[in-house]
Length: 209
Ligand code: PRP
Ligand code: URA
Image (cartoon, rainbow, N blue to C red; front, side, top):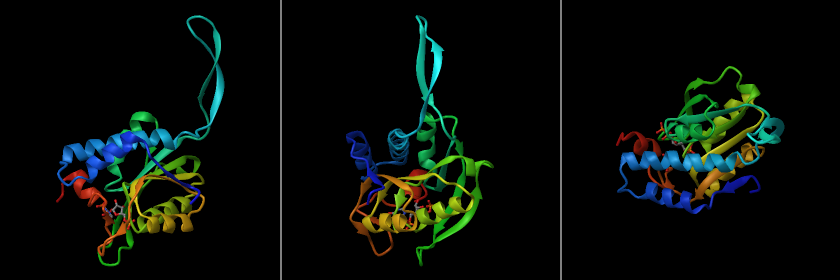
């Protein structure tokens, strides 16, 4: 699985354990989601291209390196992906944000699209798709296809939890997409939930259950 990057940073794993704990309340769950997203964004942008410019420090002329290349857009998959947006914007405040509404049919577990609002220049941007959970992989694979159909060339996927089969589904459909995941769990239960997982990410972020 060459394009899967598993985050093994102690801070990420510690915060993820907090999220897994069923005793963790909405406020702490939201904070941990935001903080892990920020830490993962740092890792996922490690390959951003740099260019050298000339600046004046208070003491001398100097060459300095700044980020160059295409502009970035974040695309959260609604709802749960929204919980990751603010943390990422703290690192890249000028990024544009597109919204992709997908819900998983509870019977078939197939993703259903209900909303799509993307920056007009999305095809010219590098895109990071964000969703805390990649379970069967259906929603993430569909989101990546929707963006490719709009002309996006360079896409990364960032999630907190996944499973070996979920990652395989995404990788098979989109071998060109780098995947950043905080942890890979054992598998799915009979309702398609990640085990041990953290429950329903959307419900825990928004307090709907
Ligand atoms: C969750 C999650 C993913 C999807 C993952 O969303 O946020 O989008 O399920 O499952 P999959 O990999 O099997 O497709 P959900 O459909 O529960 O919608 P919500 O965020 O609105 O609660
Ligand atoms: N969606 C979630 O929110 N949690 C899971 O475990 C699976 C899908």
